[in-house]
Image 1 (cartoon, each protein chain N blue to C red):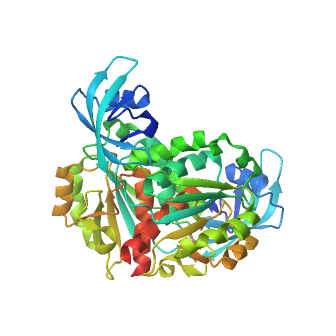
Image 2: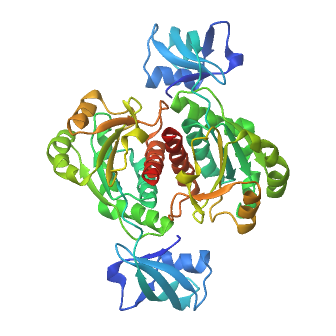
Image 3: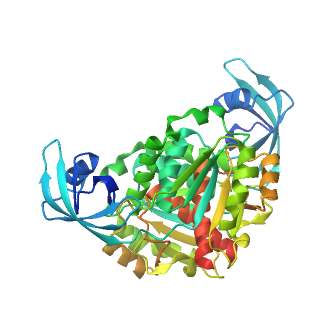
Amino acid sequence: MNIILIENQELNGDEVVLEDHRASHIVKILRSEEGDVLKVGVVDGLRGEGRIISIRKKFPHRVILKLNIHDQPQPEPRIDLILALPRPIMLKRILSQVTSLGIGHLYLINANRVEKSFWESTLLMEEEYRKHLITGLEQCVDTRLPTISFHDRFKPFIEDFLPERLARYSHCLVADPSGEHVLARCIDSSAERLVLAVGPEGGWVDYELDKFRKCNFSICTIGERILKVDTAVIALHGYISACFDNT
Amino acid sequence: MNIILIENQELNGDEVVLEDHRASHIVKILRSEEGDVLKVGVVDGLRGEGRIISIRKKFPHRVILKLNIHDQPQPEPRIDLILALPRPIMLKRILSQVTSLGIGHLYLINANRVEKSFWESTLLMEEEYRKHLITGLEQCVDTRLPTISFHDRFKPFIEDFLPERLARYSHCLVADPSGEHVLARCIDSSAERLVLAVGPEGGWVDYELDKFRKCNFSICTIGERILKVDTAVIALHGYISACFDNT
């Protein structure tokens, strides 16, 4: 936890009372004292500092912070991600990892090789998945939550929903080991905001790749090595970030 | 398991008998039949095909393959990694992930913020860590094992061991959020083989960064976001791969 995150409704003027795992973290991990100043942010709001004006070190832990928060969040991420719904245990890790790396919007979609049972996971409820986004923000010292939408049918997503959203992207890419283009060559100096589609374990089927092509996506590759989805998503994020830094 | 990997000592002419988890994988996951042809490779050797000439589908599973292996492994990775020894549970995942992404050599070293107990993990024994490298190769369809060396004292590593190895690298980089240079700007068209140093949770201490600087490492960053080590290693690998693809 590199920043203490607070929900807007917890604010009481410029003070906040913490009585949950955040208070325990401040007492037990940070071993803070009254008067100490901590990094603090408001979820989907500003970042700044919180001075401890009261701390109860015995269980149940309790910390009162006086806030001074006037700094902007990290710059808005330039990458949105379309992801074939992965196995829930893998999705948990991906959610916090891509949040810490920085993405704007995550489209979780169905695909031929997505197991149907994945759509029944409780992780798809906001109160569940939001925890993992918060963990990612606490790690990377940001306050800006990615947004998520779920699309349990591929065809309506790609034919009806997606086309209306494409105007916001300078580049639309599908990552696939079979890709016709080296990914780095697909990102030019006009790159502003990009959407990247990553398939399920086993990859996209031809029908899906064709549908993406018809939406003007380029099918790109970062090499012949077949990667697990969680490795691929993180490596691709790093890869694209380098392309942005190069342009 | 996208390739069946065989140890050299298991070969009997051009045949091999499988009686362990690989046989079970062929029977239960691939649901193969006699006559089917599978992707096969020899660890640290060639890749090719294996035709099933006998298969016992009842437990205990048993498969005999007739091999035809004449293809080279994936190209030699151009990235070596210096990694402050992570927590064993995280190291397991990193080992298979960086193997599937492709690294040549992994230097696991001590650092101020490495917990001493990590050095006592059984994962540091070859018979243990090698399993995770093999898992990475099975994923990415390669046969070339990364090599690993362990260095439980930082100073002898950086003063005595490392300098003799540096001639093999065109670029020596340390990744740190405090880095003075954008990583993409540190990799130019002379890039051939690169060594990247990634610190422990909490980062390198100033003394360690100074020591790397004295060895002519550049301290680089991919942004202000603080990442967990496992996320950072994978994202950095992707980032550097993009720089190679761009030069």
